[in-house]
Image 1 (tube, each protein chain N blue to C red):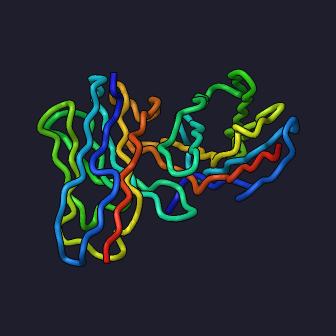
Image 2 (image 1 turned 135 degrees about the vertical axis):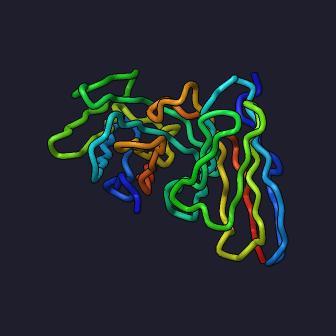
Length: 111
Length: 114
């Protein structure tokens, strides 16, 4: 079963608006990562947040982590058409060396 | 650096055939992994390796074998292809052996089993 589950499954917004995606997971984690996948391509790493961090920024991206609720959110500010992609969260879980991905959120930014 | 390369990009097999998907990285990463991605879904881990000579199973290992004879290469073998193995396969590598490290993905191999 998948560790992370993203919400919503799909999101359509206008260029310039903010996009928020959420990820919930089931077991304790050491770290959580967000990846982007453009159609038909491999995944690209966006940001990693450790379990002892609550918020992290990278350019127009802001990630928050709430370990008490076992959830994370990815905020993309001032979205652009080029942000159109699928976004996945990935967690490591406890024990082992496995990175487990959620099913993803499909973001469509209309120009 | 070429990063993570995968060959072939596309492959069509008949049920029962075997083949090997190639994966190579030139970043001297210890950790390598194989995922499959089915339509509209996330990635599921097939097998992974934390270094040359060391491999282990992921979430969906049945029907697949791997080996890691060198740091650079991590081939995935389909023993007897089945239609359920129709998918896009991604190889990834990561520096060190910490599971939380950033993973670098190859472009993928799109496999169809008839």
